[in-house]
Image (cartoon, rainbow, N blue to C red; front, side, top):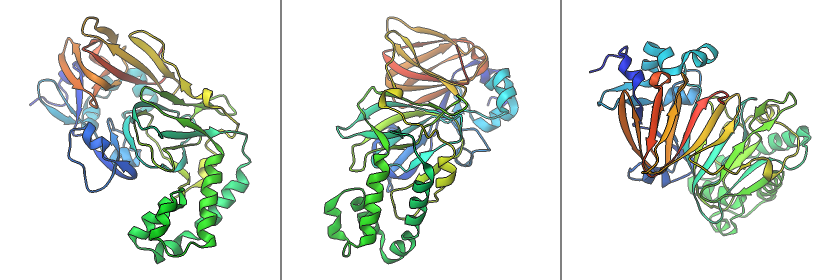
Amino acid sequence: MTALNDPAWAQAPLALVDVPLIPRPWGGDALAALKGQAPGREPLGESFEAAADPSDEEAAAHPSTVAHPRGDRARLTDLLASQDVAILGAEVLASEGPRLPLLPKFLDVSGLLSVQAHPPGNPELYVVLEADAEAALYLGFKERLDPTPWQNRWIEALGALPALEADLGPEAQAALNAWTLGNDAAARALPPITDTHHALRTLNEETLGLLNRLSLKAGDVIFNAQPDSDGRLGAAIHALGSPRGGRALILEIRRPGVTYRAWDHARLPRRPLGAAAALVSVPLEGSEEGDFRVIPAPGPVSCLARSEAFTAWRLTATSDTPIARNTEDRVRTLHVIEGAAQIDSAGGALRLTRGQSALLPARLGAWTLSGDAVAVEAAPGVVL
């Protein structure tokens, strides 16, 4: 067995294995299929493809395991404790400490996520693998928002939820969730609809009406990045999904960090909300759909996003033309979204299929991607 301080760990591409699949109320069964697993009893919403950050509660709860091409396995946090500079690179280690400043995920968006925000300086990239006809996401305020009235409305509406939660069983709660999001047929499973129910439904409609609605199709690339008052790129307010269904399978590139839920569509059971924290974290200026859509450049390598948080590229390899890359002393992650690919380096080779991911240590240096495949490569920080 390879010791954690063996340089071989940092000289080969490392497969990310035993990736955790996380239940979410808005998830489905597409992630299980992507990962070759049987569907679970609960809907699965996201996979933590690469996680090694003790300061992020969820990343700490689902730390990644890496596998060397010759078969040895290790917890990524343990490997960083032993070889932080070799895995992360000197610049990343100096700026971020001994943690992985990326938290890439695959998302099965089969429902509607909360209206949410992240701390300033934390944009997100969404690459759509699959999408139904009604798939969509809500992103960015259409017009400049005065936050105080909306914050007060959301907080006031929360006062009605404890009584509803206490009065309704799980099936009725699910029916209320569906009806509140516009499914009139769900009313058959509810007690008589009250003024409170109608008020919550109206608030949902008006809240989503504040945001740009972006329809989704396979191949779409959305960079959720909007400058704040200081010109720093961060994530705009957003809610992935569609009120009445429309599943999408998405690769999300983001940093670790907290999520602030401004509004959760009066969903039961209740989840913690933080409207005030959300609204002080996002730009309040108006935006348009075109501010977020990315048209990848033709060719084997196309930059999809560049920011202080991360840089990401689409790599399109063919069996005839491998793509030559170099880690340039900066840790990378790689995620195959179409086909099957092989990573070759001086320290070993790794084969990946659709839905699989790899960690590319900073000391890996030169590597090539071959096979008929499309992959997304991500690195912390601005990379030219």
